[in-house]
Structure formats: structure tokens, C-alpha cells
Length: 432
Image: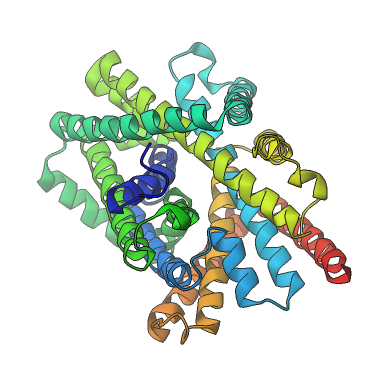
């Protein structure tokens, strides 16, 4: 681990990349290809553009406030007299992290059991997902030092394996560029622009994690310089990684296979063209990626949950700590993510997570717009972020309404319940 008081540019980029590359590409690839075909790499890249504009407000607010509380702290400090604003952003942020925990655990399970006969058994998949979630909750409860060492190993190993996967897919690719470009042209002519925008919005969750840089503001060198450099570099690097893997997959793996095996598309496709070695390489990469993301998300989000509870916007029981470890918050994060896994499948969790982080990022952009003179922000860039994040949220909800109205109703009800909970605790906090 780097010196706690000496986090430089390289370390901060590693933190952000490690937070973003949490199995997202393994999850979104098959779903994206099923919706837009050969346009999937470009739709995923467009999701990166949305993430870049979302990151703009985080960067500006991060440099201005220099508060390790990040999302929650920024909104609370921008609207200091609004208990409802602080409570709402706190609840939405925490449940956004819970949805990503469920997503990572579900992806871990999908790849971990992909080689077995019971791979398509939904309840086995959920049981494995819940099991890995509680294993890492236990590790976080046991030792911060042990978790940190394990996290370092997993982050660097997963990046190395992602590089190997990308090179292998390109090497084994049987689709020549001429055929690819012809198919791409056909897909572009036949695919509505709305579908591309919907995929870009859905894949936004795969870029969640860049804000972890701001959580380390007290341990970094020169925050004014390193916050923007690290976040923008990480977003660009991750977008490139996702694009290359998506392109390599389409060149090497038949589209039908990617669509058929959405939830573990890369593993099944790699097995067809590279045999057991290819399949195992992808499975190990996915397991490492999701494991490090589960562990890191539990670590960071549980501390943010405890801080929000300290301010009175969540139950006071969540403030309990043992040896500085927020034990009750860790158990609550794991327990609520377990309920979300039991309630829905991969696509529901993916779309709920994307909507949540689109909404939270939208609130950050609105906060930045309010104090844009103090943060020295471009009005145009901030308005583009607000517009893009608003459209993305509306598109996902519209897509849900047209294709799976019951699923959309579940998401809407969940958000109404979150808003009611936030309102209740805002009233309690205002009376203190």
C-alpha cells in the first residue's frame, strides 16, 4: 500500500480504475450486443462520454470543498439549510452503492458457475452471489489491513488479465475488418438512435467508481492538480479498455453466442474459440474484478453510511463502530444487497444501478451549477451534464415502461420508498 500521506497521481489513477473496472464490462457486453448489435462498443464508449461530463462536476466540487465525504458532503454543504436535500442525496447514494454490490455479486456468481451444469439455475446463481457478498463483508469486519492488502493484489491482477483477454480476443478474431465495417453499417442503418442512447445510459453504471479518488483527498499530494488529472485520466482509460474488449469480443465471438449467454457472454465465447484456457482466463478476470469491487465498495460505502447516520439521516444504530470499523453499517450494506439480489435478476439490478447513479450524478451537476462561480465551472459544460444525465434517466425509465412495465414499477416503488425514508429522517434531523 502507498504511504497514507503520500498518494500521488499514479496511485490515484489506480484507485479510480480499480473502482470502475468492477466487472462492469463482463456484465454489460452481452446485454448491449443484444440491444444494438455491432454498435455495442460505440454505445459503451458513449456511456464513457456521459461519465466524463458527470465527472466534471465531481472534479469541480472536489477541488472546491476538498471533503472526503464526496457526494453526500458536497450536496449537504451546497444546500446547508435543506435537511431534505442532505437526506435525499444520502439515501440515494447509499442505495446506489447497494445496487452495485448486488450487481458485482451477481456477476461474480454468473461467471463463477458458468462451467457447471447448474449454471442456468437462477436460485443457485443467487445463492452463490449472496455467499460471496457475505464472505467479503466478513473480511471487512475482520481486518482493514487484511482487506487493503487483498484489494491491492486483486486490482493489479485484474488489470493484467483484462490486458491478456483483450490481446487474445484480437488475436483469435475471425471476423475481418471489412466484414465488421459492413455489418456495422447495416446495424447503424437499422438501429434507432434511441436504442444506442438507451444502451449508453444503461452502461453508465460500469463507470461508477471514479469518485473514490475524492474520498482520498486527505491522503493525496496536491489535490487541486491531482483530483482532475486522476479522474479524467481514469475515465478515459476505462472507456478505452471497455471499447477494446467489446471490439475484440465482436471480432472473435459470434454475435448469437454473445446474445444467448448475456450474463457470462465472454466466458462462453472464449471457450468456443480458445478452449478451456480462454474460458478460464475470462472467468478468473471476472472473479477478480468483481471480488475487488465488492470488497472496495463495502469498505467505502459502509463508512459513508456511518457518516450519514452520524448526521441523523439514517438510523443511529448504523453509527456503531468497533476499532474504527463501522460494523453495523457493513452488515446493513450486505443485508440490503442480499434482498436486492433475491428480488431481481441481473438486468433489473443493472438498470436500477444505472438510474441511481445517473440521478446522483445529476444532483451533483445541479449542485455544481448552483455554485458554478465559486467552483470556476463552465456553465456550458455543467448544463450539458445536467441535460445528458436527465435524458439518460428518462430513457432508461421509458425503456423499462415499454419493455418491462412490472420491472419499471418495482424500480419506481423503490425510489418512492427511498424518498419517503429520506423525508422522514430529514424531519427528525430538523427537530434536533
